[in-house]
Amino acid sequence: MIDVIAAISFRPEIAGILTVLVGVVVLMGSVYLLLATNTGTRLGFLLALTGFFGWMFIMGVTWWIYGIGYKGPDPSWEIDEIVFGELDQSANEDVRELSDRDPELVAALTAADPEASALTGSQVPRSLSDVAGVNPDLVDRAVSDEGAALLVAGDEVVGYVGTDGERVSGDAALSFSGDEIVDENGNGTAVEVVTYRFDTGGWNVVEGADPFRGEAQAAADAALVENVASIESPADYVALGTFDRGGKPRPEGDGVWDSVANKISNTFRLTHPEHYAVVQTQMAVEVVPQPGEAPPVPTVDTEQPVMSVVMTRDLGSKRLPPALVTLFSLAMLLLLSWMLHARDERVAELEGADPGKT
Image (tube, rainbow, N blue to C red):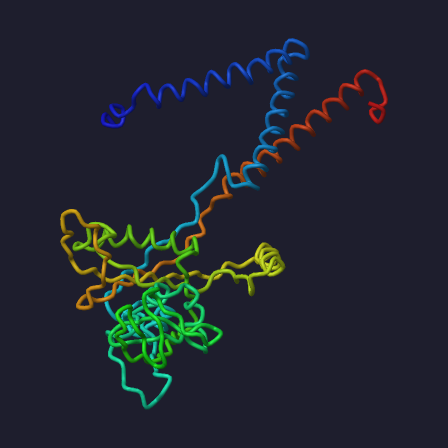
């Protein structure tokens, strides 16, 4: 108790309390003073109280609609568990359905030509984030039945096949000639076409530009830094990908009508399906930056297990407090208004007037 009292200072605690008290006395008190001097203390108090709850009702409606003012906790991600390695170790059955995939989020890779030489794991992207690094537009194709057609030369991805069948290089200094890719010195390297397909198992792939991914990644970063002893900051690992499943339905297309129809249907939806997210990361290779050089781009340490942060969406209660304030204020406003009406009828009756004409 002494520690609590010692922590209280004049600013902002005491000053804030005094400010509110002075505001209540000066503003509300002055209104009551004027009403009391003109109508009497009891009737003036009833009128002032009715006006106060009328104002609180209007304010509560504004808070309720816009989610401002006196509000509850915002929606957030609650950490369920951190899984190291295979996702089939997860306690969540829905998350285990994602574990049929490779632990590094690598999909089944098949060469376009069955007779082509098999590609090793180092020759293909290890995650959808790697595919997005080649071209963000390839992510949607990678999770479809079509797959993303990547061009592999030696031990790296050098480009991709566009929707029109044209081969696109990831480096302006490289060009294609026949079945080879040629560098600026004229040296050619054989190119193979590899189809990258990722079966999400009913999970949605959250792209990097989606604000939802940023929020989920921030929650995962905080959980990893707090619970994993070897991690001091998000710079110690590389984000591989983010997936979500459940929640309210999303728009079926990118059109305006799709968004409007989805918003309307979700507004009148009474249930809130469970919403899960999985953020997968992997430790980065420790690299000592050289003096005078830019910090190196973090690369995945393939010897380390994938860390999957499993989360459940907590919808919070952002609008619950203003809703309660609004309903309580409305109830008090109706009660006080009825009391004023009953008083007027009683006064008219005592004065001998017709109550229906007052």
